Each structure stands twice: as C-alpha cells, then as structure tokens.
Image 1 (cartoon, helix red, strand yellow):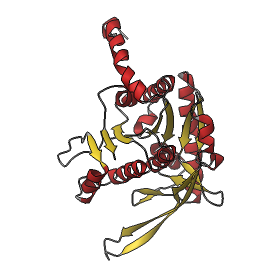
Image 2: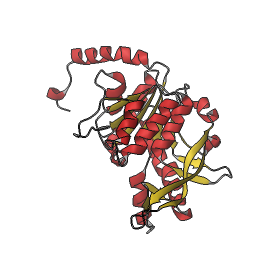
Image 3: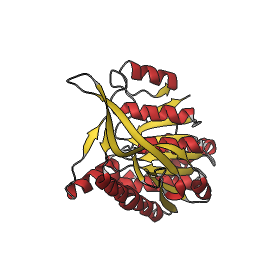
Length: 298
C-alpha cells in the first residue's frame, strides 16, 4: 500500500470511535453468517472474510459461519465425470453425488475456511450438521408442473433434505468460548444417513434455533430489488410476502426470502440479504451506520 492511500491516523481513530455503539449493540450476541457464492473461490476475498470474522469475535460478538459450496461441488463433479441435474432450483443428489457433496462441503471447503480464520488469529472449529446430531433432516420433495400436460408431478430429489430438528448441545459447548464454529450444510437422517441441505436453509435453521441477533446471507446479488431493479433497504415480513405474491420477488430470491421469514418467525431479530463480494460487507453491516443489502424484520 502506498503512503498516499493510507488512512490518516485521526480518521482511523474517528472510524473506530463511531463503531463503539454498534459493538455495544451486538455485545455477546450471536450473529450467524451464511458465506457462499463465487466469492468463496477467490483466495484474497476469502482471507479478508476470515479476518473480518475474527475481528467480530475479538469485539465480543459470537459469529457462527455457515458456508455453501455450489461452484466447488460442480467443479469436483465435472472433474469426476458425474453429471448434475437440477429440478425446482435444487440439485438432484443421488448416492454417488451425495458422497462428493459431503467430501467437498464437510471436507475441503470447511477446512479451508477454518484454516483462513486460524491464520488470521482466530480459533475456528469445523463441523457439519451430522456432528453431535446437530441437524437432523427429512427428505425434501418438490412438485413441478409439466409444461406439456400442465399436470403437477412430485420430483424425487434423492438425498436432498430440509432441517427437521436442531440440537444445540455441540454449539453450546463452542459459542462464547473464543471459538468460531464453521458449519457445513450436511445433515443426518433419522437412520444416520446423509442429506445435502441448501446452505441458506441450513443457516436459517441454525440462526432460528440459536435465537441469533442477526442472520446475514452473503450472496452474489445486492439484496432484494424492486420492479425497477433498485435495492429495497428494509422489508417487513408482511411486505416480503406481498412482493412474492405479486412477482417482484422471483426465482432464486424466493427461497432466500422464505428462509428469512422462517428465521424471523423462530426469534431471530433481523435478517440481511447482502452482496458478499462487497469488501468487508459483514463489518459494514454490523459495525457502521452504512448497512449494505436488504434488512428484513418482524
């Protein structure tokens, strides 16, 4: 960094001082951060994210990271010559695919994030929903309308699940003890099998069970947009449902917003859908007056 680009010391002190009321607001509170999208594949952005998470923990906030890994799973499946199918926006996960999903999510990606957080001075611990029976899921079924016959049919998505029970025993041993849990969205079935769970849905279930102060969904988009493609800064649950009904919220944003509504129903104070590619997005949202993304509240 050149001398000209360095922040003036007085300006640095002012910025730190202005962060104080935000630190006090989140003091000892739990913040669940869903980290995903293509930003995960860029090393410097991943290291910056890890540093920001460590900073939160150092300011007496209790961060819980839930990560996705769609692009990385896709890359590994392609490498192994396994073709993916998607129906109703979800990956159809057969027995061969679920092995790869578990290997990538609970293995390489999880431990990479743990490594970056530890390198930044934190104490991360990598877990998945199967550890300590944390998240038990049930099989997901979806109905789609056949475009030719206009008849609804049930689609078998294979080993795709949605959270049914959350056991906090394991997390309660970690949170508040200077450790940062990093969770892969792989859940257990009632008979000890494996389910692939959408990372947003998994994060919503964890945040709801923990009664988190905030759930931050880091995505590849700025937040919820209106019909003119402008960012909506704040949304109530009621307004969100209206926007889904009138088609303003559509496509892949619908399950994200439904996750937000579920988390709020479970007792989370606020949920933010935000662009994870914005540098230091988590710090901007939590520790400054300049929030990023769309804040949803009850």
